[in-house]
Image 1: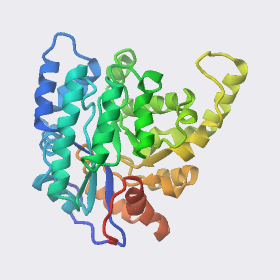
Image 2: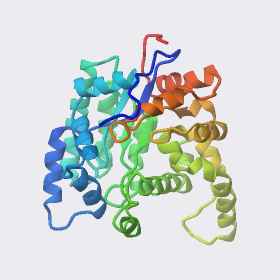
Image 3: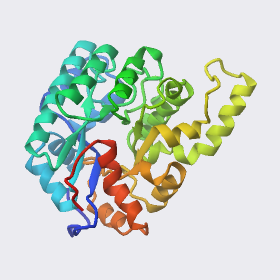
Length: 357
């Protein structure tokens, strides 16, 4: 795509590590085509991938070309934008729109493909482990394989799976494995499920413009209020897009959760060991993917701490070189800026850059 600001960002006193960058094996698109050809298709999946896989628009063509590449196209775009490293994850909805057997099998295939790309470019790429929540036991085993065999140290789950959320204890074997292997889970957006999406579709707001954030913010809140972090206190979740707005709701979440517990309005809202905002500060990390906005970044650093806010671009869906220039120019102390761009990612994703920058 044509960039409004084509000047390549210069060298900085930090590495620019982009932490929410997507890929898609071409074989997954073949599976998606079969799903889209079925008589009954999830409306969110149809709106999202049905568009990108069929539209002749410049945006859609750019995204599809970039998603399937783990070599020169991607590296060229990274170089042009001054990105030193990408943390790469299987694009939404990943395997979570598939039947269970296909999802389990393809998650392994996708992880092997990504691991091979990382081996080709070990100083430029690191990968997240894709899993199939449809089979929690298999997902737990894939986390173990991803860590011990493939050398990956984080997991991506593209929010709900056929309308089901990880707050349901039937999925908690996944959290047990993630905590045991010290692998943070990137809870990436998906389109709202079928029982939620219609008002968004009617207004064209089901995707990244708003529906993604609403759906994934809901998912994260369900994890908190269901007691996931009381059961798994060391579990770490990563949220993109400035935490899907949850840091801006922290005060009201605390107040209304306490009020709801006291009133016993819902059986599903139980007392927690801590305030909701405490879990945001201790069990979540937040990236700025798609939100290159200094004021929002600074506010979020103030709420959850500068050790928990990281840079991301959201490639290829939001490939904007201007945003790199804007974030480089942020009025932020040098130590905090290096954490934001580099060292927080090195620590969280267990990557070594050889002491560069």
